[in-house]
Length: 245
Image (cartoon, rainbow, N blue to C red):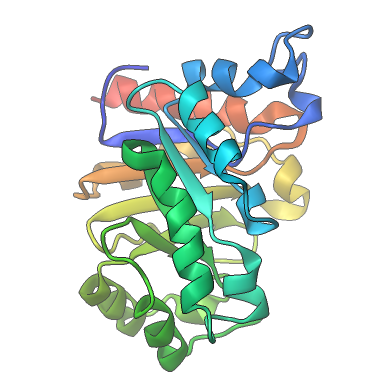
């Protein structure tokens, strides 16, 4: 990939058993998967931080196994976003930010995912963003269509928080940019969802949208992990963006 630090393109995770032989060399040790992955892409979105807090040793390992200019994005833990829904979470969030800071200059973004049944609620959003450390790239992903609203965009811009655009079966495929950062998650569309393989035509439509974005940084992650479709599509998107420069 060309050296262009506006664009950070990769996958939502790297540790999938069915990627062996489909993306990773068949005999490559799993302990070297991140090292191999980080030679193909310049960023990764780590989802397992949603399920459990990593140890400091684990986070340092991510840092040490990746090259300079690589970015690691962390998905905020479910205790913050789903169990407590940002109520009495400041100390837990501070702990999570502390782990993220171990990544130093390799920290990409912090992704906060709102539960799918949670519809637009401005007071809920204000309470959430008021707890964010604004020295970080904070991104919020909504999974209910009611959040696609100018009032929400205005609040995020004022709060310097990025809006997570998505490609999925259930939400608008609008490219929304707030806080001068563009962030897209490709979940797969139709009934196949995470099994979905995007076509050239579908990705080209997103490239055209990105050309119209004036944000300083663009983060794109593919979450269609089945059968290594995510790295396939990420590489396709890389080539399209490189050729459009």
